[in-house]
Length: 306
Image 1: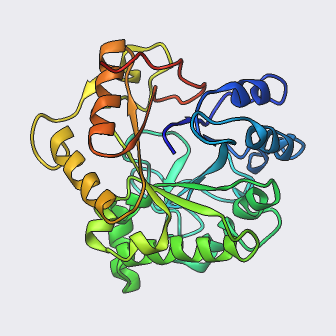
Image 2 (image 1 turned 30 degrees about the vertical axis):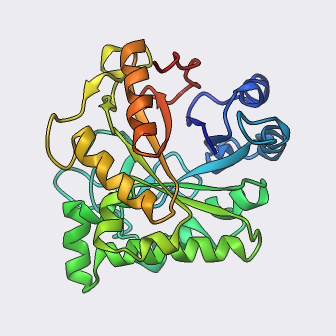
């Protein structure tokens, strides 16, 4: 697999199937629309099939993967009930597994105690649960966000109170999601976004998932930015340290040497930075994608890498 792209907002049943199918990539990560209130009739299965029947850039057919936030509750999902109370900066929410606010400013997203059965029941095990809908719609896998939730202070405090290791519990959750999905679809894949730190702490992660993804190898953007806002990308990685391009790239390369595919997602607007991000990713043996933080459309074709 040599290329991929992602779109999590702005999908519609009329134009999106054609746009997605024509995109010259091997894998597409998209929003599973039926998990949102009011979208139960969205023709998701038809969209997925059309993507899967279209040619990839190096594969005879594309892979279609669904986004799934496993470490946060999102108040725009069907599992969110009207009697739930969102957390605030001063207090946890209700149910008690709702722990706090998103530290990066994503509205409507709340870190959870993901090891508790109440949260797991939100994710899978029922026809209306997101993973079950994803399987019913024929997706090839899930792209799991907020795998790094084990490092969130609210999560760590709740884990200490419950007497569990939040890193180990995240690995267990991902393994259980994969096992559950493969009982119905043996080739189903699980991709863990921003999982390198978890893999370093719990190497067994690399046996629980099929690939890692990593944001911000070279450039990041702001959560609050619109597609054409300057803050939607081009914010350079630190010049040195574990999270610099060189430092993070070396860590990703170590994962690659263990035979695990790694996808990167950078946020950049200008052609020079887009080309730079692609070259850096490929230089560390990864598969690059460059977009903008809203992720509400597919990025234009990347400039050639010199």
